[in-house]
Amino acid sequence: MLAAALLELMPDREEALAELNGIGIPYVTYSRETVCQCGICGTHLAVTVDGEEESEDMHAHQHTHDGHHHGSLHEIKHLVTGHLALPDAVKEDVLAVYRLIAEAESAVHGVPVTEIHFHEVGTMDALADIAAVSLLLHKLAPDQILASPICVGSGQVKCAHGVLPVPAPATAHLLKGVPSYSGAIQTELCTPTGAALLKRFASAFGERPTMQVSAIGYGMGKKELEAANCVRAFWGETQETGGDVRELSCNLDDMTAEAIAFAMEALLEAGALDVWTTPITMKKSRLGTMLSLLCREEDSQRMAELLFRHTTTIGVREYACRRYTLDRTVDTVSTPYGDVRRKTSCGYGVTRKKYEYEDLARIAKAHNMALNDVISALPTVTSKGIE
Image 1 (spheres, helix red, strand yellow):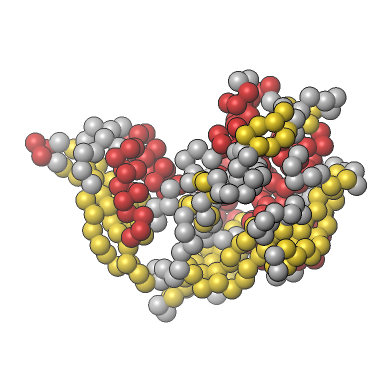
Image 2 (image 1 turned 90 degrees about the horizontal axis):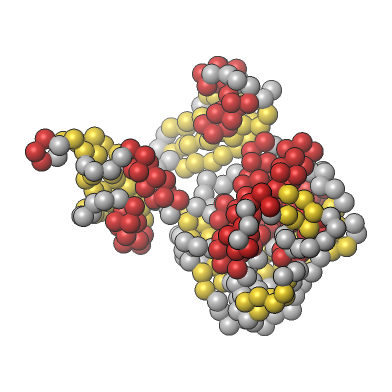
């Protein structure tokens, strides 16, 4: 359903669908159809394995099914890296999602990750879902992905291991640290695969921010519910070119650099707009570090709680301030080393372009090159484009 919602955001849906079918997942075919529920029409993305489409109730819970054909995480990695027609960055995303699922299954069933096996049909179906979402997001290249709190549903779900409570144990494990609620609908509304995708790609969870929407995608399920069975995706520009934000900071003199780095990563993952450190001299001439962040006004209390949780500080300062930012877009440039994302920032009479560091670093590691050599080898980025 998430993949179907993203497919509706694509400028050319047929071209995107053809690209999905060109991934090369064994026995898998993607097709789309229009489905209407509760007066809303959207896209249902059918994934058929050997001509059969799995039901919504079962396909996400066959990860450790007892059967004759199984695949380990190592075998899935071999399939993804060696046989699927996907950009390297998308392959990394697919494997990261699979690792999240395997780690959740490992924690729930009490077995090592290396012993987690995936039922052959369930693996292909889940792989198709994960690859589709990862590829479509790669092609859309949003600056950020925000998600609402997750409605997991209620009641029970039947899976390969028997009848389990909703949310299923693996889903509950994956949604640790993510705001979620049960709701009144007596069915499973978030599967382990869906939870892993959200955990991998969403940078923050909460109410939809103020944004200028340019496209809306509806991904439809086929199960008849008392509410519309759909996932909705909004594509647009958040109103952040000039606005009020909050700056939070605290002074630290008893934390290691590694612990501070961990705190910074946790704050960014939780939705901080920016995080940075400043070397300072504290009382009694003690050397210390000031940890600072920017966040939206409505997130300031939550960020203060995270600062107390992840640092040793006993006090946090908050300042109201106003910031001005350039509009940002990301496109993909084809190079001799593969696809590289390029960020364009413009506004207030200026335009700047630069390649994404993560893609440059990936190329440098893959080809045993220095980072500067990679930059020199790629087309020159200018304010007018590339040369």
